Structure formats: structure tokens, C-alpha cells
Amino acid sequence: MLKKLSYTILFALALSSCSDTLDDINKNPNATETPLAPYLLTGTLKQGADLYWGDANNFNSTLLFAQHWAKIQYTEPDRYDVSNASFTTLWDKGYSTLITDLNTILKFPDAQANSNYKGIALTLRSWTFLLLTDAYGSIPYKEAGQKVTPAYNTQKEVYTGLLEDLKEAQSLLNPANGSVIGDLAYKGDILKWKKLVNSLRLRIALRISDREPALAKQTAIDATSDAAGLISSNTETFQFVYTSSPQQNPASAWFETRDDFRISKTMVDQLYALSDPRLPVFAQLPSDASVGKYVGGANGLSNSDANSQGFAKTSKPGTYFLTSASPAVIASYSETLFNLAEAAARGYISGDAEQYYNNAITASLNQFGVTNATTISNYLNQASVKYDASNYAKSIGTQKWIAFFGQGLDAFTEWRRLDYPVLTAGPATVLDGKIPSRLFYPGTEQSLNGASYQAAVTEQGKDLLTTKLWFDVK
Image (tube, rainbow, N blue to C red; front, side):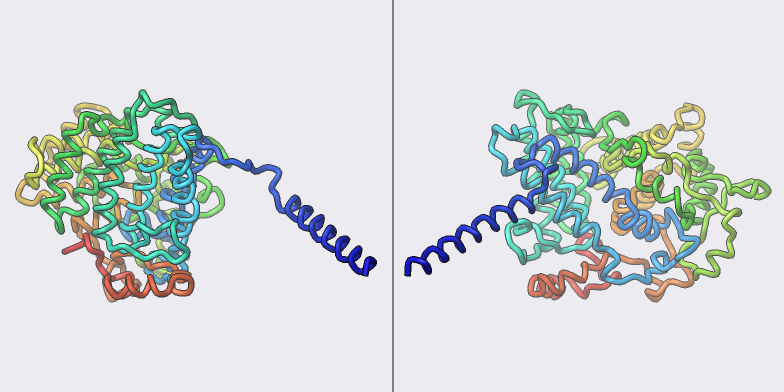
């Protein structure tokens, strides 16, 4: 009996020792046991910029849908010949990385993260949710990060919830509440973060304007009258500035080894028609010097027809976007001014819509290095550029589409909302002449969160690229 007991004790000790050893083996010696707010903030900003400007959500999808860029080979995404495995990055990284890390900051005790860290985290989380709902429609929002199989919220619920989140973020942000390090966007300048919050509130006001005009108007009034102000110069643009490889702009890294994109013919033709001085910034001259002009690639062609345009005879996107340190612009001064122009045109706020519009174009020209006063004046005074108060959506929509060049997710959203410029699907596209209106939900949602997915699809409409989202009423 004693012998048997001894074996039992030794076995238990061995199991305990083995368990301790396995615990030690499974520890990452390079990982911190306690995540720190500055590191999480830095990582979120970098990964958010990569997500926004990278291939999956930008130049291999939404930049094609908005006809900023085109494919000259491997044209399937440009023909909308894609599956529910094509748009997983925005969803997966948005939830598992960005929102998870930002929620971690929000849950920290005050000793680990002061209210400014939490205000920034809530702002960035709101921006991430905004990207997700703009792209997919109904999404997990209130239960995201709370349950393994979270319920989806309607797009209306998400937008209105984000407005409340941004109000809270504004109340948390105060320069007197402590310093912030790890902020690679605004270098800890809390006053700039407060301006970004109001600019995002104005952005959402216009997202809901065709569905909830009363709430949109009140939101626009609140955002523009808040003492913190809005983004008010190009130096306050919210962007992530890359450095050198491997911390380089994703488009730069892509073009180091691949050659399958061109600037879209739609964009080149529009810029030529307007004598737009941004054309040499947005495009490179073809490598075949005999061509002697900018030539865009047509969207929605078969692989053979796209190839036949000539790699040397068509224009790549401008080097402004393809250097290692090219910035990932996320919320620009120009966009804020266009939003003010539209808010004024809709009668939400006081002010001269035409002046806001002209200032927005000027800010965009300045952003891309066009600063000559005569050049700017000549551009604004063209009949084809002048503000048309009888069709503000056309004026603002067209110029905003140009100003958003490179920002595929937001260019795609605003094009769907304002319906300008008029775009035509390419000849080899597979959606019966239609351009996508949303992204597919990732296929994993059907297998891992099936009940919530099915409820969302039942409410919103079939999980198709052509299903219009709540904000897109036209």
C-alpha cells in the first residue's frame, strides 16, 4: 500500500513538473507579460495604415472599383471575379488585431493608460468600425470582442453608435490629462486628435444624410460648433508617414517586385479633360518615350486585352505614391473642407458652400505639391470645375473622387454615396454591367458565426457584391 502511494505521489509530481516545463516552453521570451499602451498605440497606427493602404483593401480591390487604378495583368479583381475569400484582411485584421488591441487600452486602469490614451484608442476604434461598416454593411459592433459569436448590428445602429463613441472620445481627450508616447501620427498632440474626432463626426453625418437627415444636421452642427474645431490645414491631416524598408509604404513594397497595376484610364481622361495639374503627380509617363503622354489602363478587361495595352505604353501610378516614405493619408484637410461644403449645401450649417468647395480643391492641390497661385486660380475658374449649386453632388462628388486618389476604401464609399463621377463597368466584368456596391463577408463567418451571419443577411440582403448598403439610397 505504501509502495503504491509512493508511485502515486511521484506520478503527480512528475505531471506537475511536466506542466511547469510546458508552460515555460510556451512562453515567448520576446513578448511582454503586460502589454504597454505606447506599444499598442504604435502598433495599431502602423497596422491600421497598412490595412488601409495595402493591396487587399486598397489597390487590389477598392481602387479598382472606384477606377483610380486598373490591372494590366491578373485582372480578376478588376473584373470583380472574386470570392468570399477575397476580402478577409479588413475583417480579420480589423477585429483580431486593431479592435482587440484598442479594447486592451480602453480596459487598462488609469495607472497604465491615462484618459488621452483611451480617447485616442476610442477614436481609432471608431475609425476601424467605420471602415468595416462602410465596406460590408451590418457588422458585429456592440458585441465585438465580448462574445465568440457576436451578433451583427445594422449599419444604422453602427453609425449612430459611433457618433456616441466619438462624443465620449472627445470628453476623454484633454492636454491636461497627461502625455502620450507612441503616437506616430500626431506626436502626442491632443489638440489635433480632438480636431480629428470632430472631422470624423462630420464624415459620419454625411454618411447618414440621405437616411437620417435630422440626426445628420444636428451632428454636423455639433461637430462644427465644438470648441476643439476641425482639421484646419494640411499639417493637421491624419496620416501615417512611412520610412524605409521594411517599414515602407505597402504600394512601394509591392512595386519593387511586381508590375500589374496602372493608373486608370478613367482617371487620366478626367484629369486631361480638366487640365488638372495633379496629373503628373498621380501618374508616370510610360517607359516608352515615344508615347510622350500619360496613358491610363482600361478597367475590367480580360487578361489578354489588358496585356495588349502595352506595359511600356501605359502609365504606372505616380512615384509620389510609390516611394518607401509615401504617407498613408487617412483623413485629409481637403476631405474635411468638401464635407463642410456639402453640409452647407444641404443647409445643415451656415457658410458658403462654393467657398468651402474651392478651398477643398485648393487644399488637395497643395497636398500634392501644386502651390502656384495662378495655376490654382486658372484651374478653379474653368467652367468644368466651377461649383454648380444646382447639382452640388456632381461638383463635390467629382472633385472629391479626384482628391481621394490612392484612398480606395473612402473613395469607393463616397462614390457610392454621391454617385459621381459616373463610372461604367469594363467590358469583361462579371456583374451584368454593375460595379460592386460592397464587399463579401468572409466565408469564415458562415462557418464560425453562422446564426449571426444569417440573421444579418436576412435583414440586409443577399451576401452579394451588388447588394446596396443602408447609406447608399440611389
